[in-house]
Every structure is written in C-alpha cells, then in structure tokens.
Length: 235
Ligand SMILES: C[S@@+](CC[C@H](N)C(=O)[O-])C[C@H]1O[C@@H](n2cnc3c(N)ncnc32)[C@H](O)[C@@H]1O
Image 1 (cartoon, protein in one colour):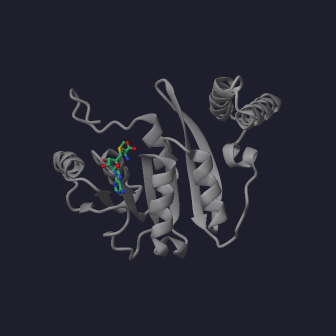
Image 2 (cartoon, rainbow, N blue to C red; image 1 turned 60 degrees about the vertical axis):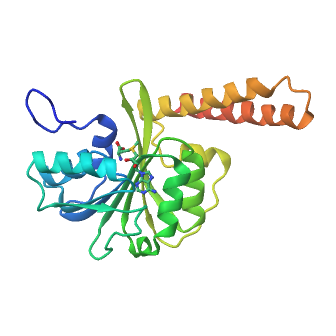
C-alpha cells in the first residue's frame, strides 16, 4: 500500500517474501498485479530493471496506473491488460510472479505459456490448492528450487520458486504438501501444521458418514495429517 502519511510504498510480508526470489537486474512480469504494489516495489528497489504489470481486469489496472503514476514509475512499469501471460511480450522476461491467486489458476497460467520453458524464474504464491500446484509443476517438468513460508497478519502462506528443467517428478502426497519447505524453519512448521489441521477437520467431517468410501477417505486424511504433524515436530 501507499502509506497515507509518508506517501511511501509499503509492501506486506507476503509480497515482500515474493520479491526476495526475483532476479536482480532482470525484467519481471507481475501477473494479476492489482494495485501494482509488487511491480512498483521491484523497480523502486532496483531489483528489476523493468516490470510488466498485468491484469485480466480493467479495474485493477486503473488502480495499478494510479500507484505507478503517483510514484513516477511510468517509464519502468508497463501496464498490460492480459489473461495470464497471453498478451505479454516474452522477449527478455527473466521472472514471472503470480501471487494471490488460487493454485489451479496459477497452474493454468504457467502451463499455457510455453515460453516459460526457456528457464524463466517463477515466483508463485498460491492462496489455495498449493499441493495440486506443486504436483502439476513437477509432473510437467518444472522443478521447485526452493520454497519459503511466511506469515502476514493472521494468515500463513507459502512462496514457491520454480523453473522449467524438463525433469519430470511425481510427488507423493506428503511431498506435494511439504514441497521444498525447510522444515527446520518455525514458519514452515507452522504452515505444515495449518495444512494438517485443515486435513483433520475434513476427516472429522466425513468420519461418521454412512458411506464406507467416505469413512475410508477420512482415515486416509487423518493418517496424512498425522504424518505431516510428525514431520513438523521432528525437525
Ligand atoms: C487477489 S488479487 C492479488 C493481487 C496481487 N498479485 C497480490 O498478491 O496481492 C488477484 C488479481 O489477479 C487478477 N487475475 C485473476 N485472474 C487473472 C488472470 N487469468 N490473468 C491475469 N490476472 C488475473 C485479478 O483481477 C486480481 O487483480
């Protein structure tokens, strides 16, 4: 946000964590830029030389334009109306950041843009379905290089850093949830425990179902949750 008193750009911890994975001196593309806070931060901090700030909707792009104009960054931040990366000129783009969207939408945007296979650095912050996103990335030759959990007010997120290597990997159900998180990091432990709690609650919801398949599913979910808790405790 732009601080109403100092008029300075202040980034929340979630977007700040994303910014840490962006290549120094590169050209970045922020997909679903909304207010262009991350895009503006990247050029203001001289992390990126230039940023394409894209959004599918005109309203967010108007908000982005207001931020960029207020900060005088029009020569470094280019606003583009685009569904995913469809209208983004791929030449020279070193980094693509997709933050604050569901994992399935992120997956769709990444897999649709074939030019990402040229080794573009991906910074992905799913709001939901992170396990599905990791699974799809690895199945399609994208390698998860590293991952960092972060807390932003009362929510906990993960930021995935990946790029295409062509190496196909099939993650098991635990790997799909833990990804490349460093489980000795207290925030990563907290993230895993949050996912485990969600699984336990789903298991609880169907444990007394009349349907045997549902009761089996409840057992599987509870087992997975217990495995995750044990992992988070042991490191
Ligand atoms: C919740 S906001 C996230 C904004 C910012 N990236 C962040 O993390 O704070 C999601 C933004 O993504 C945009 N969006 C949704 N689907 C999109 C798509 N297919 N292509 C580009 N932008 C999209 C929405 O219009 C909205 O501005």
